[in-house]
Image (cartoon, rainbow, N blue to C red; front, side, top):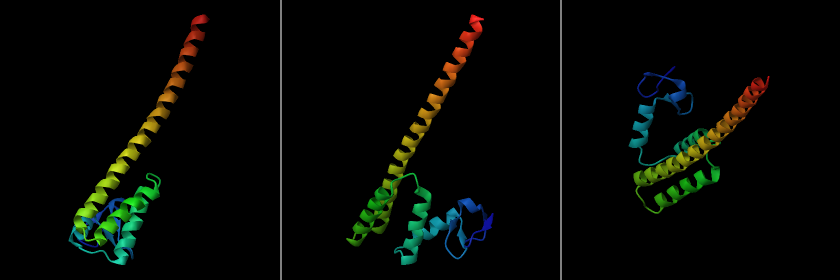
Length: 133
């Protein structure tokens, strides 16, 4: 447990967002600060990039995440609304992450199914041997 730098309430360390220099924000304070910001500073972009890397490492291809974020950034530079573009990028990352999770779950279920089939075959073989005694 750690104290939130925004509201001073105790929050679980694994659910908190590290804001640098050892400061932690609870999810509520993080969302409030993110919604109140209209422009991101260089430091904010760096922290966001690190958070995305940590959360999605190994799940999504880095190139796909980079493509989504670069498109979002390009659209913002062209004059699109910041909130709309960040929301669109977030939705796209969530969609791609959802598909990646489904693929990962199917792979895991396939492995479990194979293991169960092997065990089933082994049990049937043992029962067959017992019956022949």
